[in-house]
Length: 254
Image (spheres, rainbow, N blue to C red):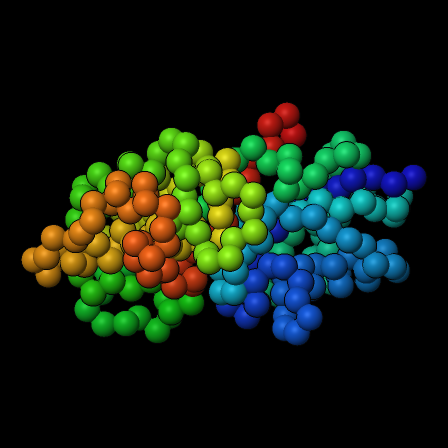
């Protein structure tokens, strides 16, 4: 008998070349499938909710796979997998789902968080987990622009060049900055899907514009015009990967 199993993964992306398996280099998918092969005694393919780039972390990456190991209860797969995983990846829980479940195509919403902090000097212990800003940004100004992302738009202006998706239209349900500690800021965004590097491009553009204002400038064009232009060249640089976290994924009736 086979069962379809869904697991939630958390990982530190600092020493991975992203989630998706590659010919050369360590990936999250690679170490996960090696762990699954170890407990099944044969290769086991996986499907993830989405791919994360080099250096990007996850608190809520979801992965589905089919298992023929009757001896392991569905809720015990997390512990079994963890026994064969390296320390920078952990399965948080596992459960059985319907046989046709697909971790990517059945997702109805995805949520990302981006962490920033402001300090006069670089803090070495935060180098792999947040982006340092030289001064405190104006959250009200940032949020006025971030609010323009909400709704259904063509996000080609914030997509990585060579994007293979058929459509660059996505529906964003929220996008905002909030203070989470004295010097810490978190950007949260949720949508029905994301283009590759979309979140990092949005954060980089918004922060770049805020830095220009802090220097007394008036960034042009308007943020709404950048979005409407559908031209990556009109937007700013991408924020560094270490501040980005795949936070969670929603699955309707699952």
